[in-house]
Image (cartoon, rainbow, N blue to C red; front, side, top):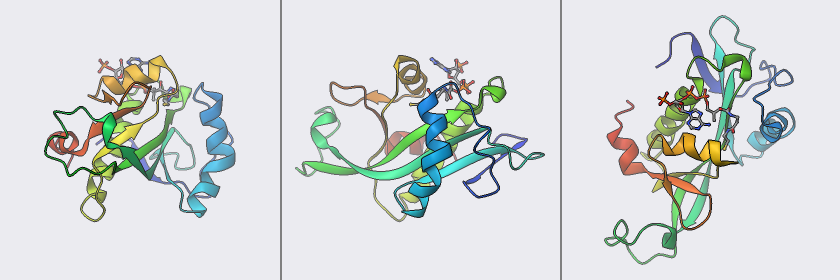
Length: 170
Ligand SMILES: CC(C)(COP(=O)(O)OP(=O)(O)OC[C@H]1O[C@@H](n2cnc3c(N)ncnc32)[C@H](O)[C@@H]1OP(=O)(O)O)[C@@H](O)C(=O)NCCC(=O)NCCS
């Protein structure tokens, strides 16, 4: 989708120490927790690197599974659903791009790649929606720009897999 960058699962070749996105918790997660979470199969971190600098972390995101409460989905969207209290979903747990790559629409590319992978995974494991827990209002506005909806009363947002399918990401 984006010339000049590759996205791969986080590996030992990636220079995690140099990563800075302006949000300390997301920098620290990559440096101290991402590999461990991956080893434990709690989440899969994906890293974007320039094709000509494959050790550089230009941005990253993580995907994992979670259950969401059906009650957070508006009644008109769930009227044909079985009466389950919980439904399966995919958590886009973290998403960040380096301040060194702020002018190339990398945030959008990371998000669309995450949505594409989440959608592909539904060929083998069911998932109603992609879910995000934005860290702040700016992040929430970024996700809303791509159609993410409020989930219940809190900051959580979701994008139904049916909507992602219609994006035609390939
Ligand atoms: C949020 C983040 C990933 C956005 O990445 P980015 O590379 O700046 O985004 P892009 O340049 O691809 O922008 C894509 C679109 O989103 C919009 N956008 C980007 N940041 C936005 C923000 N904070 N608020 C509203 N819209 C935003 C852009 O204006 C653009 O819209 P356009 O098509 O109308 O021009 C990036 O700012 C970041 O890593 N921030 C720090 C970490 C963070 O807060 N992550 C979210 C964790 S929940």
